[in-house]
Image (cartoon, rainbow, N blue to C red; front, side, top):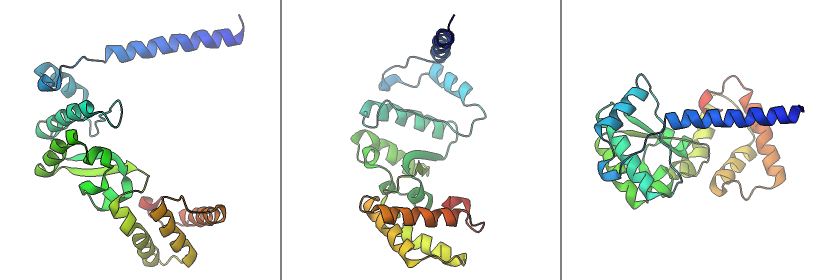
Length: 204
């Protein structure tokens, strides 16, 4: 039997095994009006025992029905399991320093189906965080360059003024207006900075 045939059979078997594992841990849910039944809560409680992080996925970023369902899960995790932080796929830097709603991507904050979620988070003092390296938030737009400059000065790390100016240009235009020479200069300076032991992990 040829090696490629053996590999193909192995991959097919592995795929079937993976689907079998997924199916054994897949549970059908009711509509949002009767979503979190006692049985569902038992399943969740069992699977998150001693877990500090719970991931809630969605089929797409613009599915209102997913938003409504996830809101119920979030309420359960906060009210009955004591979780006090929530992480969105949004600007890490902006939400690290400023946990306001306006730093989260608008397909959540402007969604009608998410308004109940954000009211709940505010009332229950749940802190929003971000994990996306796409620096597009209001806070980052207005503060990133100054914070970086202040940080480098505080560490007595000298950089060319051009680096600060290009950093600001990159943040304000999402990098779209940088030419190849400017990108090369930015990346070269960043490489040098990241090799500096004075730099804290936040800036890596």
